[in-house]
Amino acid sequence: MALTAPAFPGRQAAQPGWAALQALLRSPRHQAAFGVMLALLLLLAFHQVLAGAVLRAEQARAAAGQRAEAAARCTDEPAAPLRDLCQASVQAGLSLPGGPATAGPAALPQVTRASVTAVLSAGV
Image (tube, rainbow, N blue to C red; front, side, top):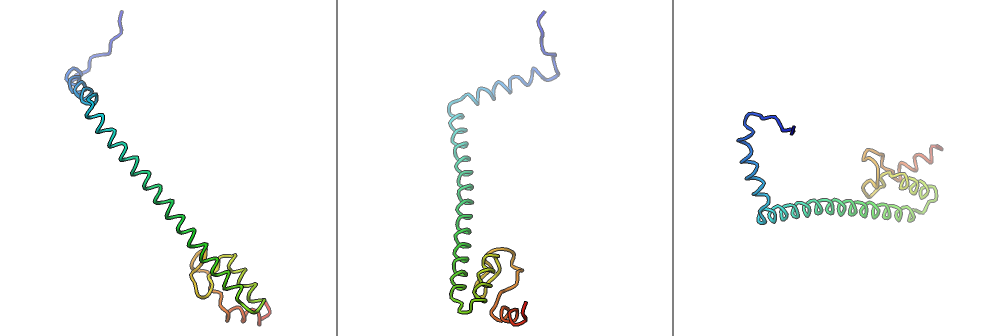
């Protein structure tokens, strides 16, 4: 006794369609077209990943340059307490006068000479 699949309505009508599709997919021309489309898709995905990596590297390089510039401004400060506070603010990622924030949210307070002298004169 052989097992056979039950007959479903429309099953016999669907067979010629699938057979034609299978024959179409076995065609060398269609296989080559599918291969070319797949290669283009993979190249596009690679390009997107590479462009994202380049963008992140540029942002990291710009941030490092800003931190180096801020550290150089701190070493030029003649007063030792101001220089130490400036270097601490650079390490903490605070905005320094004369440049954008090196890290952290933009809402962080600006460290200026007036604010530092006010803090030092208050004895805090």
